[in-house]
Image (cartoon, rainbow over all chains, first blue to last red; front, side):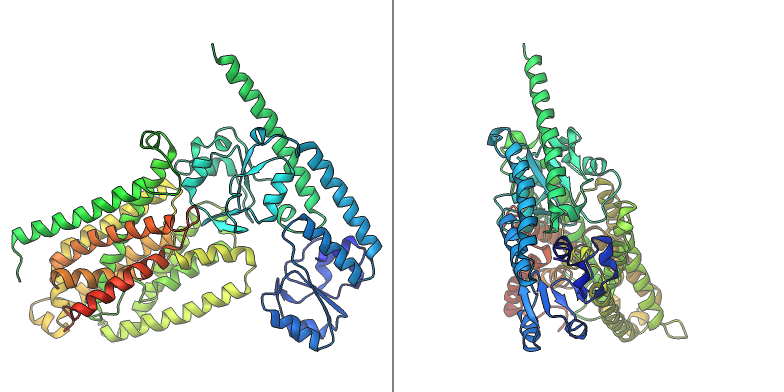
Length: 262
Length: 326
């Protein structure tokens, strides 16, 4: 939400942000009011804001307390692109920047449609199968109701975990072997080192197509994929580029194997 | 002591049949539907086998650690985590995760968990030790429970101030999981547990006098302090090694010893090996459930051990009073 407000050129009106709001760099100077979804209400009120914009409170009571103290509260839930665009418009309306909000949405929608147009028409059979690893202990992935699922579909891939309805869900590693994804996206916080090598050392994982063909992607910053804000478009573009490259690779692979056949 | 060789033979046959059935089920069930012929070729077989091996190792280790703690502390409520191993290892793992040591290598988090467990155990022992070198059972138990509570609160403090990205990993330690990725880790933990189990089986006879009380045990010619220290170390090693591999798995170390004791009596020479095999089979089965009930998602294994084991244990309890504890 902080990023959306900065995109609306309202960074200067921000009096508080959560501990996790670290982008753009200017946001570092804003007072901190506690965790995401669980703000410190005392600190929040001490900043005497006119409006509090939240992306889901852990406890509904917080919104009630704020309202009773005469603070306007806008709570936006963002689970897919439509909800994101809607949230940006709602925020724009609440801060009297509806026009700017519409232009941000229009720009994002334009970029998104450009990505979708290029990759959305790929027939299902030719789409690369994508597995997203959010955490390794326990193995966690993004299911059908997650933003990432939407992102993968729009960038021309198939999320292998689509059938799981939870947005974030633990997953049995043998299921990943069965799915045999063409691409694995490692979107774990603080994951460095050679992800591909680490994955290939896992028991039974060396036969997965993505691991065998070196299609383990760990260099897209998780914030670009998970944080519902304007930067998501960067993530979408990076993801599309990777999936697209993979698709071409598959074609070559297929061509090569065809040639090998007598 | 009725310890007929025929009796033992029947017992081993039953126990190994139980374990074998569990292993077969474990290798052939899972969320991925694979035909028998394909199973051998895919990596899935290896994954299931290593997971089953880990369940055997951990199930046996925790059950035997439970028997030992119940005997040396002379307390039916004792279990592997009673002396603070749980919170100690969780703090070790949590600091490794939160300070980002996990980046250094896949080994750092298990190693930190094991280190945390060892430091805690030494601390508990040092607190309970009297100036004359003796370690009274009740002081040891109290010291363990208090250290555990203090460390547990400290853990909650660390979690509450930590950036949320680290939280997930820490919670995993508290819930436990038999997911195994690293064959080397499995080998190291397996070796440690097997060494621990072999020693426990070798020394099991010494546990019998210890349950009678210090006075009677020393009347029987036993160096009580030395024996207790040895068992204390052994059980801690077993617990620490299992925690390093799969986090905290509750209930099994409490329940399996009692269930087996009800079935075969309180002689530790039979109890220790029987618990190892029975516990291994139980955990293998529990893990089967953990990965199939909501497949392809997984349920924390501790949930299954308590849910599946609890009612069974209560049923045993209804049928007979806790044997060996009067």
